[in-house]
Length: 555
Image 1 (tube, one colour):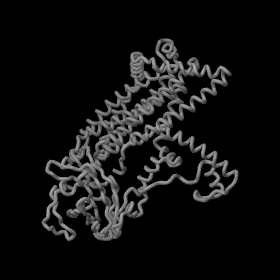
Image 2: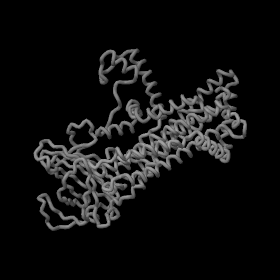
Image 3: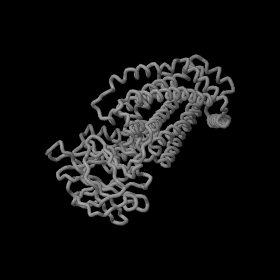
């Protein structure tokens, strides 16, 4: 995979969520208090306190029965509004998709990637517009048609109305998604060529930590940069002491296959400094190392399968072939002799050919355990899409409580697009450690610094005076004022950056399944669940607050 999955920082994210929600709540309360004082005068604080007390009373007196009734009504309205017509578009798309996707020239794993990516992306792109329109137009239409007045005059509270709308549209979206997911799974199994069906699997890798040795054998942070623009992979030089060293944890007899073999799967790249015979593959060698006993067992030479991955079956009984590729007859057990007491297995990789280079990143070598059926990872990815659908519904319903349908649709759509396309760039501007780490990961660097050049005013000043980002600004009151304003703007941008949801977690589930891997719970599924739950409470409260202060007679 061309990305490096890392566990979701649950505690750090929760503390950050408390900080952001608390800051946004304080801003809303202060603005509301000022507006109340400006409206009613000296009685403003009393009126504001009474309103807060009424809101707390509504929170503690919720009725699940009324919420379910409103959700059921919302589901029926969505069906009457032809929301399920999306199945027609879905069926037409899948009827003719096989004509354009079938290709006998592609390798089986690439055929699987094309078919799975098409199905999951089609499901996402078809269902999102449907739930976006339903969520953003439901409450504004109720207000316009005055059906909202019938509801709010009953015992149902506005808070229950918001929650009921969210649940009702969620039932619609998840129902549509479930049908699409089952049909898509059946379509993949039916349309995929027979030669590629063996690749419909979910690998369960054990990934390790990667370190390097330079050509002199000294530890280094990264390998050689051979000039690639995308520096995700580092390279080691052939026929030198340069090594790429992986350390895998949790290795034991349970990771061996039924025949007692250790499966090492690699996706190494080759870079040739001279052509030679292009039909000849570049050779590399595994060396198993036990740091506790200083045992080193080189394994037989392997070839780089360029552009594709390969799985090497390492027999549990190893022969020490030495540097001269001649065995001395001594045997080692890969589990008993090469795995440390704490379950760590260290594997060194060396490029054998002189003048050639071997490229790798941390995910490019892993211990492959027993594979899971394809549907196991596929429906996890569908579940992640479902969580994304819920997130869009929560945002759409919340926004629709204070603006009209077209504006709510446009605003929610913009939030989704900005979150997909510009959130990482915003993170580099505000200096977010996670965004900087992600940018460094994709560029192949050990670390990524915050974008230089200052804020908006400072950047404009540098452009007008033709100053590069590293040049010091002249000292003076104007510079101090400019940087003070930029600091305030950057802090506001930090709050906006934190408010925007991170949709990258939902997209990663597709990458797992399309590349034949199981969707990891700790780095993907858990992240999707927590992001969705993090926005449910604030969206409900924002929608309730907007409906409470809104004049329903105004269409």
